[in-house]
Length: 196
Image 1 (cartoon, rainbow, N blue to C red):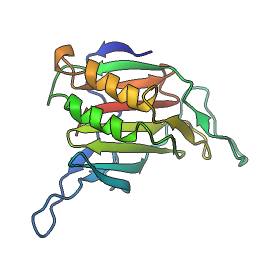
Image 2: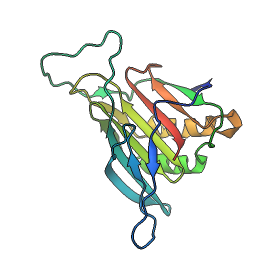
Image 3: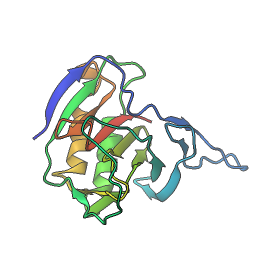
Image 4: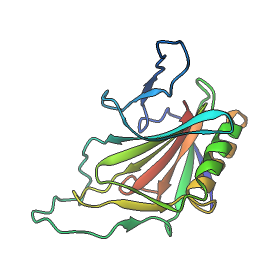
């Protein structure tokens, strides 16, 4: 169930910067994505879908200590933390600053991945997906060195969240995108949809 709550501050979680790279022939290449810390994101996948570039990158996230979280001294192998059964609370980012992503671009991105099954996000990383004006970022915020997150791409999960945020957190809502927090908390994972 998608619950939309407005917030009146620009999102800090996804202050990623992007630089457009041009090839020597002047043709457009995929964007060179810079992570929040200024390092280059690792390109994981590219494709052309409906005539536009589609890409997925990964970045390392800054480690954060949360109340009650402690480092585990011994290494143990943990099962992937499954988010497919988790609820996700959505908050719109207001006011409109540079405009929201094009809803149709976000729908195309969601459509491209909706039949891709499951995906994982390694410990201390986040994934960036981009399709024309639509950028989606999902974080693994768990504070264990071996704890991966597993999530489903289908329309009831990732694709549905991307569609929902882009549809409900646009200009009509005086917003420029939004974020969905699993278990309504910063301790697990979040998905942010914003303009690329």
